[in-house]
Length: 166
Ligand SMILES: [Zn+2]
Image 1 (spheres, rainbow, N blue to C red):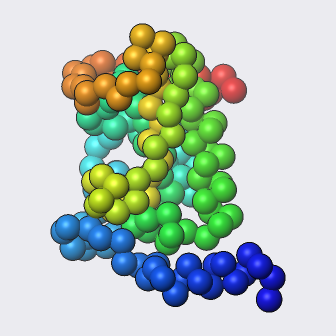
Image 2 (image 1 turned 135 degrees about the vertical axis):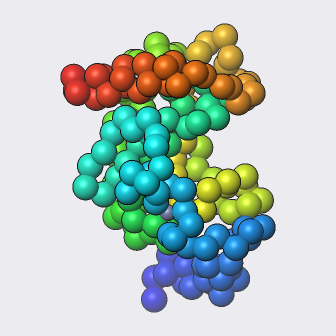
Image 3 (image 1 turned 180 degrees about the horizontal axis):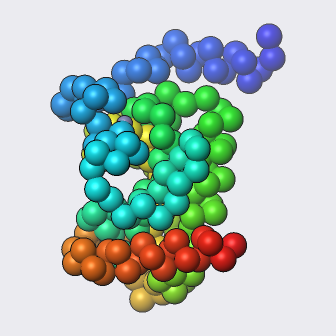
């Protein structure tokens, strides 16, 4: 047994892979708002979609263009995903980040990926936040903002158009 494998085994002994705490029972895919967005039972400003992923604007964005990238398949945390799927998710997030930054003319961006209630994961369906940042906000986490439906759709349109160009 190699050293890396020993380490993984030890980690599994210490941490039950399904036991990250959520204060509310999640109810699985049935009651999941992101699954409802995937199936279009709930509206959202979708900016990107492929067979296995969807990206849409966060309704309470930290900045204009703040986007969530999700696997379509329901899983609560990143531990529910296979390694190949995790790699693919971040490849999509990277592609989306370029379009987001160009669309809102940001100077940088953050990836934030929260797992469990303690980490402020609000929706128990794996997602990567893509948060564009302007130089004037550097180093700070800004407050969540509200944009009008028209402003949200215009931002989504700009991101979609950047993705179509690349
Ligand atoms: Zn879900």
